Image (cartoon, rainbow, N blue to C red; front, side, top):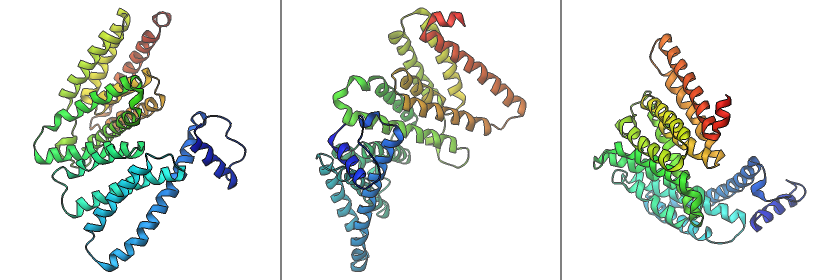
Length: 345
């Protein structure tokens, strides 16, 4: 338990919000308690910052109608303040104030680029780089990675400088590498974990936009294009079977399961990416990520099923095939965990 957590708990106890002492490390406390403490402190810091900005913005509006200079100066100053606070051992409220300053300054610079019509030359993506480099806050860095990927892909598609068909396979392989090797690089956790979380959020948003293509016209960039994605996933599968699985039975089970997933991913958007990340997060004990990927995989299957413009007979065949796939997954997992248990079943 850090000193910041102890001081925060002491202040909450003095205010009558909690009772007693914090019995153990805060990381061992329930997830809802950690989210509550961090979220409430961040909300208080964000409201304080917005109140201060609103007070000064009233004078700005009364003095001049041109808001480009105040947005540029305000966004830059807030990012500098956040970069300074994130490097200090300060009060928990000031730490969250630094996070709020990063998000608010980032929003002000994005607003400046939008109102000055500078959104088509990659500026929206490039403005995320100083946020990720300078601000040592996990949330701000994760959001910067998410916005960098989405804005960058959109700008590349609009400028026609680079085929965006390669972007999703590269993102998937990069994120899979982070899931596989993050624990081996403990010294770089300050930026490696936000990078992994930001890429995960970017992949999730990409898959949501892929399913939304059937509802609205989002352009070619977000459409489901399985050839290169399946090829990249197949290459990773062969590497994984060769390097990570030793027993012949495990290799055969891994190839069979991987082939079933690739076949399903050819038809259903999101299955290839989510299955890969689910397998990696489960294998390396990242259970929060595994649960999120599992829920997202179920939602992707449901979205595909209910948007399938086929007869009830075709849908029944799809459900039958999904049942067979789940049974194969169960047997394969048993074989991967213990070949002896698999023989008993």
